[in-house]
Image 1 (cartoon, one colour):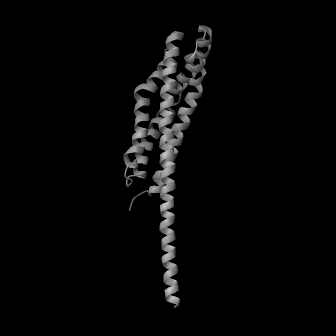
Image 2 (image 1 turned 90 degrees about the vertical axis):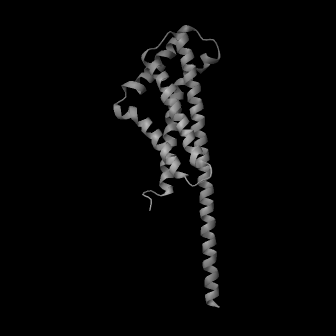
Length: 186
């Protein structure tokens, strides 16, 4: 007998994906401050004023946060990968697709996004380089958000399909019992 049922693993997978989605969304709230400068010309003063806010945010979330908070997102990402595997380990393609989506997000965050955010928060360069790095981080966050959103959509769709299959099985069992009761009454 398994320690956790498939439903518990699915709940943990949902919670993990939701937490990751919310974290990336919150980061994008700061990234978006410079999106107008990424798409069109902005003055150096305008970039510098926005740079101060973004640098302060990224220095807080990458370094000055208390130690448990710094490792929380990494822990949630690992738990999301593990739980999404166990949620769908008997499914024909979700057993590798769901964990793969979160693994791509996790590896991309560890290798590229987090170091770039750390650099933006601790060694803010001159405004032109800062703008380029901020636009790259915004693009990475958007890609990661899309992957997590796809993970959530697949999860919701397959949970619905799984629940429909359970309902059909339960309905067929009820029909069998009703038929048996009718036969016994005769």
